[in-house]
Image 1 (tube, helix red, strand yellow):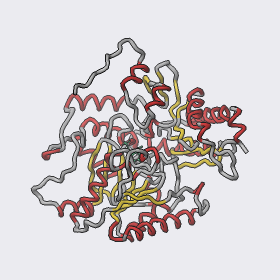
Image 2: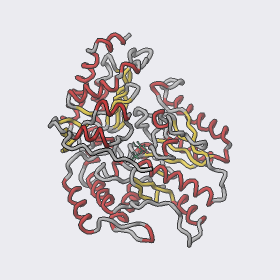
Image 3: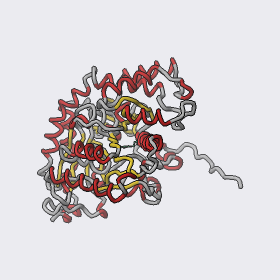
Image 4: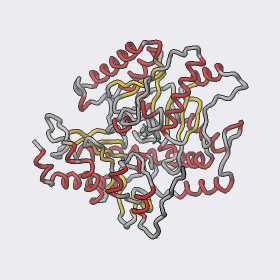
Length: 467
Ligand code: PLP
């Protein structure tokens, strides 16, 4: 059978060409054909400019990744310099390159003290896949092959690759994809605003610990390998657990003999103020996954950080002359690594981490200032990661009917007002501005969001839905 390539159509607008040929991530094919793409042309500081020349304040750092803002010249310079000197070096066959080695060392210096070894990936999903594979390998190497069950949180997001998508617990990523796999399990999210035990921090923490214990008991204590969690659940709606939750879960995992994996793909690199969210509670995980802020989105890269115990278990359990069969062509890519080193320098010596910590107060004030808006049921956040949850009734916390398509309206109204944010399916507005944001820019973000919420409130069917 021969395949027929359709005639390529010439002289069409970029949006039409996009519609014809490009498949977008996490997007309805038909929905995209109808709506068309919004193409961005350039970016500088906190702003991006679209193809029509409209300047927009990006309050979401691209996809919670451009933590140093757009247009950092020093990053462009190190990338160009590295491409000229050595654009590629494999990590296979004992090869390597200086930027990858130096970046691994820098990450170990900055990470929680338990984490002493680094494996580089291309992004977050394959960092989670790599963590899963190494955990499986570790327990086989230890002579505990029965430890194969993995537990994560409902509303969690850990990626969309074949294995990470089953640890993710968002319906879109499961529907028609035949995941979770039979060894992937979930326990309820620590969601203070909607927890069945109420918002009391101690009760929310106790419930999560009890849920984890119950799930481990149900699966069989000797069969569980690891528990994965985000310190703050990002794509699930920026769910901020009470202080003490992360440590309680970490300690429970240690007591139950299961590995604790912190997925800091969003929360890493200053997003919640310290370099890593684990630092808020002095938590030292067995493994940690990172991506996004590692290169601030200037090049694809992620990593798995591993404790010495896990590393030594794998090392001792494998025959010294046989390769451990896990790796990617682009693991430790020298250009991405050089960019990562420069991004880390900007966070630390460049003052961007400190700026993020300073402006976090203004961010919190902006969130709190919206709590009295008639559409707002909850505001929450930590550092420069936050959410505004919309409801029809503040007492009953009722969500808007999905038929009203509140997220689409929010996004369109925000765009009209010159601000970009994330609008989640259940009427949650997510915010993650770059750490280089000034106080004036932060105030402007919240002024534009208030105008956006007022615009939504003015729509007659929205007003009619309020009780
Ligand atoms: N883990 C978390 C916590 C994430 O938020 C994401 C992406 O948003 C991923 C993993 C997957 O990362 P990537 O999209 O780079 O594959």
